[in-house]
Amino acid sequence: MSQPPQRLPYVAAEAITPGPMRAEFERAAREGAPRPESHAIRAHVPAVFWSFANAWNDTFVNGVCDHALKELCRLYVSQAVNCNYCGNQRSLKAQAQGLVEDDVLALLDFEKSERFDARQKSALRLAEAMTWGLDSTDTLWEGLKAHLEVPQIVELGFFIGLTMGQQRWNRLLNLGHGSFMGGTTGGLSPTEAASQKAA
Image (tube, rainbow, N blue to C red):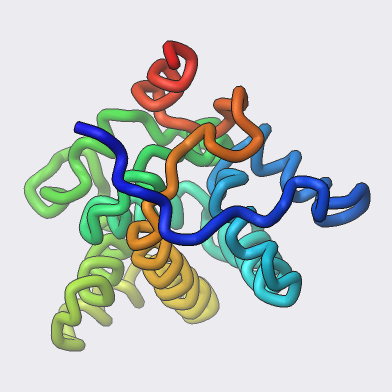
């Protein structure tokens, strides 16, 4: 099955001049999550590019809630909204903190899985509620407050909203890995990295 057409063009590569924006593109190519292709869409409007990049780095890469927990939620969202572009990316930082591919495979059935502890399940319930528009229940909030401090819940909720919006947008754009700054596989899932190397 062929890849559907990409809906918006990338910014011209020559528009990414040496400096902070070029450094962020190089980081994306090296580490992924996000990859350079989605950056190359946002870069049409530098304010959009930096608004996203700064929020991403402040609340996903860094922040007050542990990174691997946020990566679980990001990957849950990508599976739930069917964004294969985002779902085939992995945070190298989260992998270094112990996140493995078997965790990713169990995400959509996290409630029944023994792979996740109570803290992880409480965070995934928040991602589930936000993604599917579920009701705000006492059970949801009691679980979150039992395992996370208020600032961690705030950051997690903000980050889930940020990544959910971007993943829904990226899915509609029909982005493909390796189509901007090709030849880089940083931050790709093992299956996607192998596919890129074979291409």
